[in-house]
Image (cartoon, rainbow over all chains, first blue to last red; front, side, top):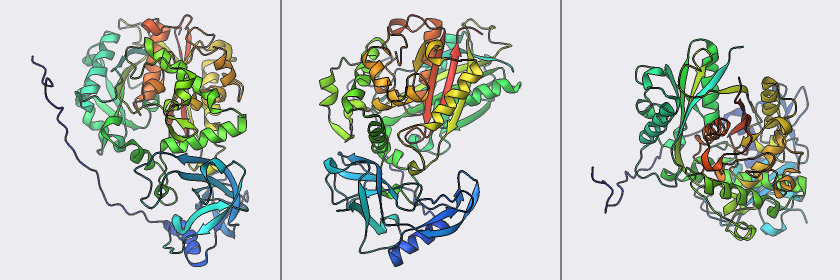
Length: 155
Length: 381
């Protein structure tokens, strides 16, 4: 049988999967986002059993398998646990961010787990694990994780 | 407990762009290779498990689209979303259930057809994380930084993994990226996400793998020498990175411990003869070896440099070239199982290692090794 590909371009069916999808943030994340949006305060739920404070907020303690009932204020300052730098533009990176984009895992003072967010006002070469950073709130806040613009080094 | 064995394996060549094959075409090739390897016909198979991911396949209920080409018509067919080692775990459980004698397990994916960073970005939590734009590579760079910080290792300590595995692939005709590399080649390749350079990262790949798992009552009925499943476990860590110790992998420690216990292995460093593991990035080969107890924490790089994990070393790791030489997501762990089976049978050809009685195959599911599946396979029952 003759090679169907000989001298021709492979045939491709081009498409795009674009399905609108809205995630309900739920009562736990909503409380956290409302606090960011309206008060520029970072709050976190605490497990009533082991007393661990969770960032990002979630309804249940994964260790105790019980519901987190209390909310506490955590600091807007914390420590970089790890970081990553994108040198190539990625399709998933929001259009307003320019490479290099730096992400950090930030353990806020008063929390037991670390939050994933952007590091900014710093060069990639200057980022260190253990470095102290502080939340910079966005001027325009709409109740999303980006109501925190980024975390910047504490001078 | 009943026993089960792998009695046939089939792999397509791993390639960057399988423009001649649809998903079903790849499954057809891998399944027929596995049947031929086992000395079976499709009528000898009593149930089928396909492994796939809807996001990677660009369609819903992706598993069903390959069922016909896998010979599943009129058979009991089920599917697993995740790495192929998890599909095979289900196949093994079915063999032990007493209801199934011969289970065909497939795993397929085509990275070439999608924008992989958008697919892996979708694995992040949509409420808190996804909009920040991270993908698998940038997430793993975060783990690599945590690992280097904890161990004091440098990028040049991890680069030899790339040299070894791409070099091993020169002897594997199914590998996508056989390459003879120098340290300079790796260290001067493009920086993708600090500290990961292009040659620290596995490529985007297409491929399909099939394995046939038989209950002990029929394992010797067909022509192929059975390779016995002696130990098997998977464990999962927390979803959020910030909940985990990213410099370690606790779920792998647990999975390996369970698998060794089940297989009666007391000293894995001495009793395991060959390893095929999930080296999606150079640092992962080192970290996974350490968490599986095959090197002390932070010490695998030193052993690697001394040639310990070379094809002719005391513990060959990824003689096939591993994921660095070809990474069809989802199928990748199943390829590891198939490769260990070939090694234990003495059928690995040019990349055959010398002594191989007991082998370890390893698969990963989730970002930064959230979940690990460890298989102990043995030539002897």
